[in-house]
Image (tube, rainbow over all chains, first blue to last red; front, side):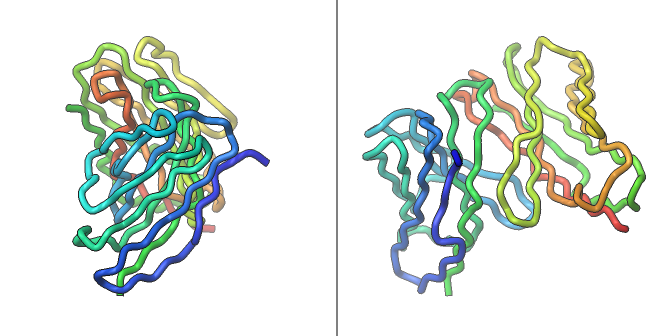
Length: 114
Length: 115
């Protein structure tokens, strides 16, 4: 089945630790995205990538880093510099970064900082 | 800058009632795309519909219908004869070239359908 997988589903981290969230897609999509969702709020874009070895900052990139070494993979690292990392993180992909393309979403990772 | 407003934070209805979710958008672009997504309790967003700015025809898909009105910058979503399985958070989103083709999401409307 084609789709997007994110792991783990739940993640707990101690303050001061970096943590990496996994996102894999087998849809052969060029573009991939990371969003953050806080309770009662919409999704906010952290980073996006249009092609392998290229990525762009979104609206709230501070404290996060990404890599895109393979077309199907777009991991997100939440660094200790992110002041309030507890949130629900969603990964998405689309055929290309164009206005009309719908994005397909993974099941999300819920990160809690203890 | 572009913006999407979903003024209804939470709505509760009884099963079989009709319900309309409001979405108002702002953009300076003449070409743009509007989307609705559903987020069930599992968390994954599910794509429902896309509409471009040049197509103001209303659309119906089963119990779902969408009313796009450029004059009022609105793209409202109606569920007819609601069911418990419709309970979810619904997001309206906007994309245009002026926003580097990124999706701008509204804050979402939590719909609860009671049996």
